[in-house]
Length: 121
Image (cartoon, rainbow, N blue to C red; front, side, top):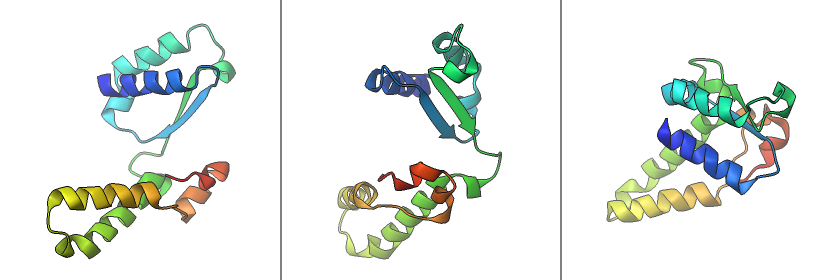
């Protein structure tokens, strides 16, 4: 929960004049009383259409709604293809990070989110 709040504060600092819309899964730390309390503080006194942070949760136990599952699958598949050729874990980690940073992901799950389908991860 504390790390989630730290990250939310970071996002707010990066975009102080914008409202944030987050899509996330039902992880326990996303639903914790501490995180919900933080949302209450940040959005205090504002009507829902003016909240600084608005969260939309994916359906429970429904990885087909969560685009990150497709990203992880592609990344894991890529690592499996090359892991026997990479001499050390640190190099494999570097290659994994390179793959994530330099791949433009395009799959059906991402298309469900309109303009977000054009985001390069």
